[in-house]
Image 1: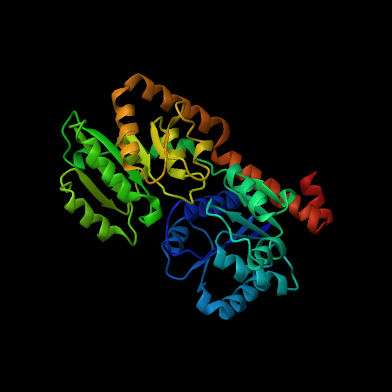
Image 2: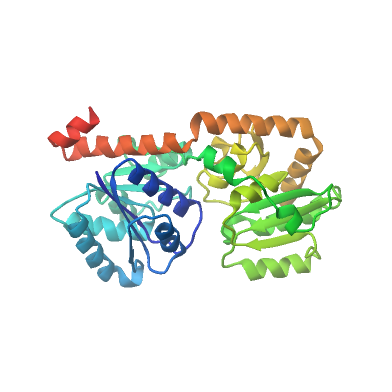
Length: 378
């Protein structure tokens, strides 16, 4: 098949990493893949370094007409069977371009976030008319889109993000983070990883650190990632007198090594989370996780089994749960083991790619049957 992925985001987080992983894996399976990215984005650079065919396009609401023209041209040149979109803006652009194109490729949209979708007519147009099939990254999101928006369940399927456990394990070795931070031998290291937007909950993480240090004196904290709130977050850390205990690591490429150095991973998201890749990676490394009960998180952080869930925007509850993990070593170790088993069973990269490829083939067979596609599916 010929597959075109589109992503209009300029950031680099779980959504973008999943899109690159899908593109790489489909290319390895023999499909022709073209990745359309935002001009000048980190994703563009990372995808090129991975050896993918990349076409940067200006995709935003202010350049909508020119974006549609560019995608229309690319669809004509590349002649994709599938156009797979990942963000709202690129879905509008690619969706309109695909509908105008004589080629009429099948359009598949992945909904990565759990943020509620508007019930207005524009959302109905985007998801019901421009889109042929919808992938969600968790069953919670798929159910919410059906109940809240009335979207047809037969056109939606949940394909959770998958983790390459072999790559994760090899990439986690030889971590020097504790030496980098000059931590004492008995230090307990608690961390969060993510793009620094307000809804990622970093301010609550810092507030929780202040509470936790009252009862766990040998605790240190790190935050890996950058983003628009970084300077405000740094200022808040200083206001709380935590500049020697909370380390802002900035954007890091060595996430598996960072995770392997942690004693506890925290995901303090306040909303909109699908199923976090960072949580899956931490579970794959047998790390206990404390996370807020938002979006699809409960699908992988099973309270008391693979980690602990707390209410969102509650720094004190977050601190108490992290303390519970730290002070109950045997229970925490078992949660890590349970988490690894869960990832091995249901959240591997191979599982994600096989399910996605199966959806591509089925959609082609049902919506644009041909001898080639029919033979492929059978």
